[in-house]
Length: 368
Image (cartoon, rainbow, N blue to C red; front, side, top):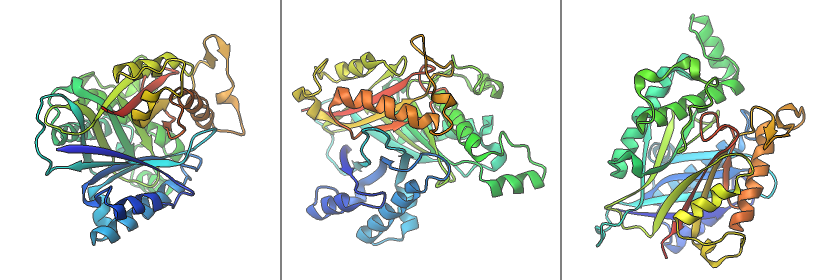
């Protein structure tokens, strides 16, 4: 099998012209696309319809090129979009392809491996519960199997996208006597992220299934996964999972590396990730090796204590700008300054994903 990575920018949330051109040129075979991950220029909250707009545009494009119905595309390709391109971030999306007909590699070196899976649609009362965690954990294991990853240590990054409780669904659930983790759509997005993080931890053997305690959700920031990135949005119903790792049996020219960020200023975490890829770029955002970077994935969260290295921040208190928009702009600028590239997937809402007040960064790079 062979994995390839293609990154495209957008003029607007519905602009898929660069991918269309790549398909026409033969650079991308639409039949091999397994996932698309990107940033749209909305607000990243419940009413961010730019995410759904891009999903629709891509489904229509791929359906036309493949001669299938748009719904068939949605069952074969995972679309994960995070709204909010604050600061210097550029609206973009990265297309991940897997050619299962590629000849086996000549060596046993580990290369980029990709697997994906879907969960069933959780009921409103399951969102943010142990049942939700179990769904995600099962999907992660199935995605690992699809990628041929046997050792959980070979998993570098797990992207999960889940839905949230809508106002209508909450009312219907409460009317039939169901108990919800939260009936507030915004809060339920956070519960989805937490359940996803614990699901990844469970699947990777970082926490036992019987140790998952709903009382720890939000309350135990010391419990976190350094390889999970979970987003939520109204544009999806089930949970979609994409597992990235390095494994034998893949003949791609790409590898992936991951490192945690201790806080919003942890530039050393980004450099450590580059070091793992053999890219020497400390202090030089124009270093030639940075041209090898094909995709940058970042998860971050404003420190709940209201401090960054002992100094007060006001992200949680700003009544005009959502805290997640602040942190995406801040951390996005830091990582862009290191990589010399603004096409970075930066997702806020990092509950139990990376160190509290910090997060994680994963970079996919060409080997030559």
